[in-house]
Length: 244
Ligand code: FPP
Image 1 (cartoon, rainbow, N blue to C red):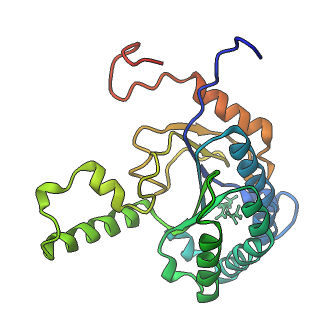
Image 2 (cartoon, rainbow, N blue to C red):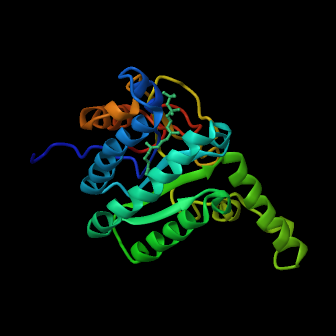
């Protein structure tokens, strides 16, 4: 609409997709069926972010702590990731999406690791949405692996401890040079970070909704974006100090 103010969009949206198990239980279905139903909102969010020109989307698919779930559920999730990559990769590539995976990938099944690497390689040159899928990921793990990398560089003489800045540290984290998460969405009613992107959510706006992930639809996503646009982001300054 001519003259309408441009909506303030987050550069980077992060989503904790919670509630698949409860969604399935409410229907007398298996938890695995709930996770499978969670693929539709994944597709929707990728599409919405791409169409709106949002730079980055990071999805929390499997946490470091999720390994403690019953073996059958872990197995079904690994199978789902493996199959979803096979069925979705062509369309993601078509949509110009660049895919990356973050997390302790050596803990994942070997054949899944190979598929992740192939998806990354195939989409590496794409210039559209930067899509990160966090699998076997924990924010503390991420910080420790970055600290280890920098400690090694210092021990080898490649850098001096005084050269460790916030910027240099962030580059060693698994998101590298991507912008911080500006909007964190969590479905399923819980209001906590659960070890997701601890560094990158330092100034994120937090949007919590009771909606269970498989039910998360376009209007919910729009509600989260409207919530973001309505926030005054102060970054430690006083009201009105920052230019809009
Ligand atoms: C948390 O809900 C959800 C997960 C641990 C899995 C998320 C995975 C998907 C949505 C599958 C598709 C993802 C990709 C990117 C291929 P929960 O099981 O903790 O639900 P509950 O709290 O109701 O038990």
